[in-house]
Amino acid sequence: MASRTQLRNASLHVRLTQVLRDLVHRTIGEAQATSPVQKIVSDNEAKAPELQSQLSSKSSVEQEAKSSPPQEPLPTAKEQRVPPDVSSWQSYMSLLKIPEKPQPKVVPKWKLELASARGGIDARTRDLVGLVRSARTDMSRSRRVEDLCRHLQQHPEAINLAFMEGAVSCLLTMYEETSDKVVQMQLREALALLGYVRPVTGRGIRILSIDGGGIRGILAIELLRELERLSGQPVYQMFDLICGVSTGALLACLLGPLKRSLDEVEELYTRLGTAVFTQTRLKGTTKLLWEHSYYDTEAWRVILQQNLGMQPLIAFSRDQAAPKVAAVSTLVSSDQLQAFIFRSYNHPHHVQSHYQGSSRYKVWEAVQASAAAPGYFQECRIGDMLHQDGGILVNNPAAIAIHEARQLWPQEPLQCVVSIGTGRFAPSMLSTRPTAAAAAAAAPDATSWMTKIRKFVDSATDTEGVHTILTELLPTHSYFRLNPYLTENVLLDDSHPDKLRQLKEDARMYLRKNSFKLGRAVTELNRQRRRHQRFVDWIHLKRDTHGF
Image 1 (cartoon, rainbow, N blue to C red):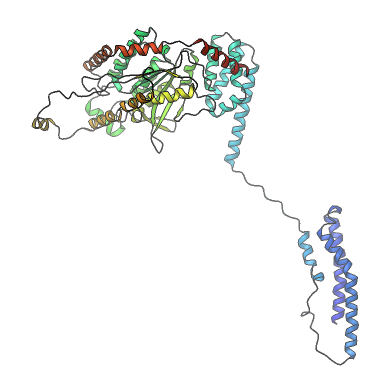
Image 2 (image 1 turned 120 degrees about the horizontal axis):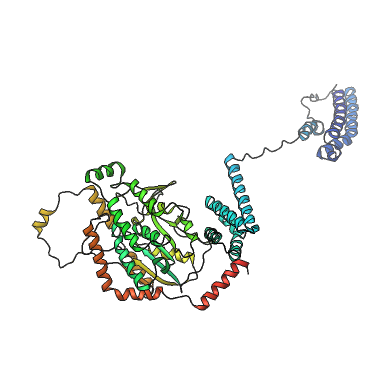
């Protein structure tokens, strides 16, 4: 019986291999007929006759064993080990399974939208640069350059691509070809957005730095008036870069790109003292507790908008004679306090400043953020950033101004750095001192919240530390610090007419004692560019225009 069962299994095995071979040919095709499955099938077909002969020989042996004396019983079919060739058909089915296709990786929707947006911005940038390059009339040039400026302001990340597409050389070529004043103004703004910086007009970089100090900006006005008288030039023609903090930022914007006269600025300061720094103690204390500002921040904002305008800082680059302006504020919305610079320019390609900043904000926003003294005015929120007075970190911006100038003109030397302070008060050691009993009787039991804030802000706005460092680093013939002594301490918001007159008198006294220093500063400022420097500037212009 066992032999018949094995013969039946062998014949079944042969038929199964034939069926599987036909199945392989039909499903996989002739190309896969020589696959490992077909090889196994053909090997089993070759072994089938040998297996049948082995089984027949085994059956004859069993018949002889029946006639012979009984021996040990043979193992049953279940106990017999199935030949591997017979049981290997189970592996055929596993090999015939069609492998499943790998599932594609699911890309987040926000990544697809971001890639699509970037692709659209890049395509639009290339298209605008091509349209500017193909413009031939002044009307088409004006329209297309304006579109490019608007696009770069809305998408600052497209500036690098526009630069790589040759926008600078295209705009410089157009600037040489056109004589239309409006088109030239638009071209200057587009070049400023791309980070193109024209060479300075003097022998080197001329920098004006103005400290913060509130109403004490009257001192800076008097000092600048004397500089104008000695040089015969307005402030905006004497300097390449003007940097200011708080009240210095206001003076920088008014005297620099806006080109206001010193008389107009002084009259504005007088009106500001009356309109802004006038407050009853009850109302001011209430606002300080509820709004964290002693004075009316909204009124201050309206005054800035009316006197400075609504144009963005980068629009100042349209005026070829206007100096570059930087206003410094303190960014308080980050984990650590950081200096933030509102610029009327962009840095050249592949140049990064150590300080955060942007040129996309309006001029009144820059001044309000730079002058948001804590306790005096509310914090200035612009977008998702929160700004306070720049004097909290750097009330003397001379070092920041030098750093920014080095980023703009890395190959130029420092011709002259004029740093103007807003006064320092040092009580005389020879003054009559009251007795200890009189001082104790006159001392109040406690100070008000506003007095505490005023003393804190006044102590935080020290400026002489930066001056000491710059004195050691810069040569004496190129660095000039002008900071008068005050006969009495004047607070940032003390707009009383007698105080203002005293500030002017202190400034005039300082000018009489330091007339020689101002004369040397004016001499350095008036040094014109040498002939070989102008030739190098011409070579660089041709290189940037034509690419050689």
